Length: 619
Image (cartoon, rainbow, N blue to C red):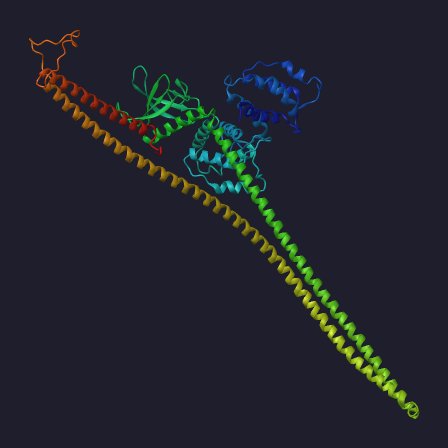
């Protein structure tokens, strides 16, 4: 809820207070006075000609709220600068206008709230009311406000009185107006037996907390920045700053501490004779404070951290945020309630459908009974026809007997004809019996057919229901089988891939181990050869040092030019020849040893380079 919405709520009460006839329209003279007063309390310049210019097409008639809104937005609200005016002055102006018309109380009653408390409750009501006109406050917000007031008075909230109040027929469950709320507070049901001063202090505390955005206030000891001495100050915490005053009346402000995302709160150990200490660190200073007890320190540190969090989140008011959260919770509850109602309606529709089907079944049973009655009537009619036929046959028999008596004289002449008549009569009697038997069989067949049809219809209905159930079960079973087969196939493929990966890793591990074993053996052999070559080199160095001796001063070597001319085959006893032979053999042995050592070293370096370049290579 922004500043414009808050101002519009208060201005709406002022506009409706000027509508004395409740027609939704206000005269221009009254709107001029209202606009001038609004400009004064909002600290913006007032243009007296703008109203006439804005409504110059209709100079005589009054102006409705819809017609006044463009002027209000363009010439007043668009020029408002937040922080350049006092919001409480705007509320007092609108309260003064609307209270004269709507707030009429008995001043002699002991339960009537003072005018100042009623104004503060009106401001709190505007803050907590819904953003719909006319302004109302839902029962949840009323309960929340009453709980806050009872908590400030340190008494327990009585839900029964509130439920009785909302159960009245005159109270709308969608919300109550501010005048109904003030009437409820003035009735004394919620504050029975509590002193007025306590009620006023509780209302002021809740007003400062909700409307004034005061998160917490109270006395704290503060350490000075220059003298470093301790003084008791009255602190007031808001989302943007922490102010401290010399007294509880908040007249002499000693300083402000601006809160932002760089601030933090830390708990300090007791020192300097102070206990329950904590500090508030900003970018430039650190403020040390001391609370009266541990509980107060915890409450202050929590409240300051909440203010810092609101500033970081870009929120200017804690209770605006809480109000939006409560509204979202109510909307969620309303959605859940609507969903439950829809489910109940569906259940009712299903119940009605079931009842309708039961009624149809009853109608079918009644139709079956009527068909049974018609069948019985048909049977009765057939029996009557049979009796009539039998009676006709009896009449014919009687007539035949009479004719036989009367014509006895002629019997001799007509004996053959009489014999034919008797045969005919016998045939008729047999035919009558056959007709009776056929009629009985037909009746029995009709009854059996009706029973069979009824049983067949019932069996067909049961078979159809079972077939539907069987088909649904079969579809579910097929889906489950397909799902199980897919999962089994995926699991099998995954197991095969993992098994192949495991076998490949095992094979590579075995190869690495074999390569490592071979390399270790080669290294050991190279080290052994290296040690042997080093030993041989040392041995031949010792031998060379032992065999070599210096040339004496009287000995001379032959010159290079006369080497061939004066060359003589030395004897084996010649010490120079022995020395040269020894030195030549020693040189050959030393070269062979150096070749062996160099080859061993190169082999060792090749094996080491082979091992370092790829331990996983397969030889």
